[in-house]
Length: 491
Image (cartoon, rainbow, N blue to C red; front, side, top):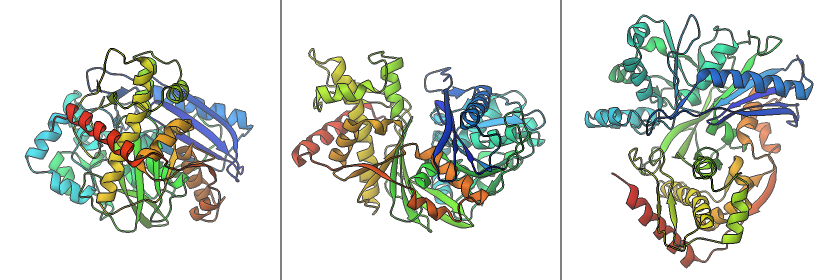
């Protein structure tokens, strides 16, 4: 096999493949968006066949661009929590994938909460009892797809997050596996004992036969046996997108904090080898397990970040491309009277209000398009402030935040983010940390690097943003944001 790595990043709105050489220089890449489906208010679905065909196409295109006939190993990172169930014999999904943003199971989660399930769920999984995670989605599919419950109890069906589905297809149905970071986001995995939890499965009524085997982030996940790749290729690295981004940001030891701005915004602070419970509505999650060494993180999740920019483009049609927002914000300056609360899929941490909905507040006759666009950028920064305040209250106080994802190309946004957080922001040269992190894992699994710790020497700073906003202005803006949030909250 060659000395190159194929890294697959299957995200919420697009699929990407990148071919790296052993020094992690990009030899070829491809990206393809796919359709989002919204059958009802608060429902979000993906067609698994769209995802599969898109992944095949971007892999083939990236390989062609790189001039690579074979690769040493494949790494996979994926949108977490998005839930699929498929037939073990045919590989055919029984329903569209229920996306992590989907809120159809809010009532089910509320019933479980009323039954007193949440303390046990949080103690074992580090998660909130929320529709965001996979467990309630699995139950919905079993209850609403004809024959699903009976087929599951007979062992004919398989559940997985997107990584599991892709591996199953790539290996011709030979491997039904996941990695520990994805498992830790299902609300079915005990992060203290590092195993599927039988009591939670019984509590939710989910047959254990549905579940994939759980592996380390660097492990043997199977060998490809499909038309997508011309030669059998080992899959050696897997991590959920936010954990992969943390690895891509060289977040391998306690103290590193990263914030990814993709469809949503996700902050993870690496907290070391012991799980750190949160008293302020954050999530305790698995950061990685490599060579059997289990690492944890404290995470805050904002459901809407980059998707708010897509909303400006696709639904409001006030911009034609995301890059326009930087020029608009620079010309407009900080907006102090209009607040956008992009709670399109409820509010995530630290509020966990699945029934909240978006709003634009403070409009006057003089309000204009540019104010709304700029206020939308500001809202994404304000949501990050909410997460970081919760982390501080939990005793985690980052001195700097490393950022990545498509939105961080916007210098105005990053300066505003630094200003309202009152701490420095570091942007790396390679802002696509998620796909890079999966590449690092695969390279480690293929022996192209001796240790995952080598990635620290590869990370390179592009620009550091320092806060320079007066305290009085920051406090006024954040007070206005809190007033706006109170207007949309239902809990």
